[in-house]
Every structure is written in C-alpha cells, then in structure tokens.
Amino acid sequence: MLRISFIITYFNEPLQMLEECVQSVLSLPLLPMEREILLIDDGSTVPAPEFEGVSLFRQENQGLSAARNKGIELAQGDYIQFLDADDFLLPEEYRAVLDMQLSIRPDILIFDFTRNLSQKRYQKAFLSFRSGVDFLRKRNMRSSACCYMFRREILGDLRFLPGIVHEDELFTPQLLLKAELVFVVGCTPYYYRVRTNTITHQQEQEHVQKRLRDTLLVIKQLNALTQTYQGKEREALQRRVSQLTMDYIYNCWQLTHSFGEVMACLRSLKENALFPLPLKCYTLKYWLFALTVNSLCVFL
Image (cartoon, rainbow, N blue to C red; front, side, top):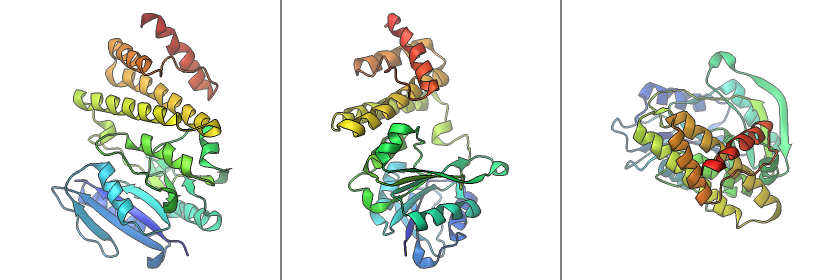
C-alpha cells in the first residue's frame, strides 16, 4: 500500500476556496491510511480553520517556498502532491493519476492543469521516460510543482529556495535530474484558479522587477549547476537553461514593453555567458526565437 502526502499551502486565500481545496482531496478514492493531508498556514492574518482528517501547522509568514519546505519536513507518505489553497483537484480525472501511480509506481508522474472546467479532458495516452534526464533532453517542461506527483525518497536534500518567486523553475528541473522512471499522463486533474492578485498576475512595477530579477537568479543558478554534470545530464540541463532564458527575454518585453529594459536584460545575460542563445533545434519556436533575438547582439 502506497501513501500520498498532500501538502496544501495557505496564505490568506478566501476560506471558501481553501475548504473547496481540502474537500477535493478528501473526496478522492483513498482510504485514510492511504493519504496524509498537511495544511501549512504561512502566517495568515485570517488563520486557516481545522478540518477533520487534516493536520494543520502554523508558522510565521516566510513565503511559499518555506511553507512547502515545512510540508516536506513533516511528510511521511511515499509520494508528495503539492496544492495551492485557492486551487483544487478534479476527483474523476485525478483517479487516472492514482491508477497510474499504483500500477506503474514511477518516480515522477506528470499531468496537466485546466483553467476552465468546461474544457476538462482525459486521454488514455501516456508517455514513458526511462529517467528524468531523458525527459529533459527530449521534452519541454512545465515547472509548476502542483502538476506532478513524485516519490518522496528521491528528494534527498533538495528544497525550495526561500525568498524568491518562480521557485518552481529552480526546483523542478533538479528534481527531474534525480528521477528514474517518469510518466506523463494525458489528463487535467488540477484546477488552477486565475486570480488577479496572485504572484504571477501582479502587474505593479516593483513586483514585475522582482519577477525578472528572480528569474535571472534561477537561470544563473541552473547554469552554474550544469558545470557539475557531464554527458546527458549536462545536455538535459543546458536545454532547460536555454528555454528558460528564452522565456525570460520574452517576458521582459511582455511585462515592461520597453526596448531599453530588453536590452538591459540581454546585457545581463551576455555578462553571464547566457547570450546569445545557442542555436539548437529544441523546438521550432525556440530555434526561430533564438535566430531572431540573437540579431540584437549588434546593439550590445
């Protein structure tokens, strides 16, 4: 029998949404001994209530990374599944994840999310990869830590970096490098609720600049990490660094609409040997973007 630790992180989300999140986990076809629900209240001004069958832990506000790390510290399950308190699981679709986890027992089981409940989908097709390295070498990845279930024992000392946004971009590729069997299942069991005041949707200038600074920090740390690997591991991580760098340049324009900001971004990348982008055929989109943006080197 396998046990899953569901780690729900909460910080001042509407209590109705938190209750919906918790109930979505409780409604899964799992016996009490097959699940562990950990609710981490990260210093909310409106404290999370207690729920039957849920272990509640409170801490001073330290941010999402610290809340997830606390959950990892407390987790006793064989697998870990993260949830944000304003999202929820779709029981019918998540059943496919549970079935795959029980029959295949991969190190990481990746699935998709939906923002629209009328567009839920389930496909029996799945993809199998011999390792996380194999996955990173061949596929683009969605970094969100809520869109996969993983075996707790592969974590080792890997944790989320506190104090930054886009912490998943740093955590997920490192977790994949530790994984052996990786499965991707064609279903959307995670409902991601779009809210204007969440981290990724805040548009204030100060927050935009922090997002860009933190993304550059993540890219630099992953790039430094590539130097500790050889062969396929280095190739896999270099691909992720290149794609994340492409996204960083694109988001710099989308968030600022400033040619000057984009040029400053490119200069920072060049100073760290991250620009021009390597002309690799990872995807057609990447190759065309790299070919286009590299032409800006003449202005640096």
